[in-house]
Image 1 (cartoon, rainbow, N blue to C red):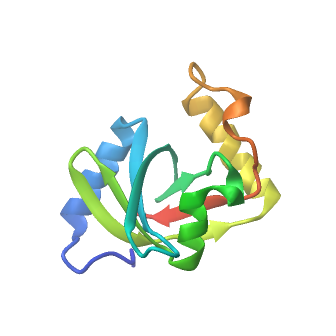
Image 2 (cartoon, rainbow, N blue to C red):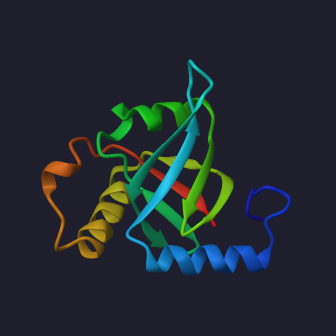
Length: 127
């Protein structure tokens, strides 16, 4: 079960996964907690099994993250493919640090410890 829109099938899932494997960024779209408007931003991510893992740069203080807390629906867009998912918020410090370590490996040439000013959460999205 992927928690996706009804028109999103296995072929689209495989195509999305392939695009994610080839990409350095994914666009996330969430709904504003006050305005109810959709808001999009590009973020770094890692694939963790069959899930996309995203650490907000300002942790739980990040605006798009606070919007996601109010409404866990997140749209991922990469390479011309978009699909909605239900995200899970992970607050376990050991799991967050594990994802940070994976980000360090993936983005090693661009990595700066200063990018992630608060490391208290990550967002897990099943794809």
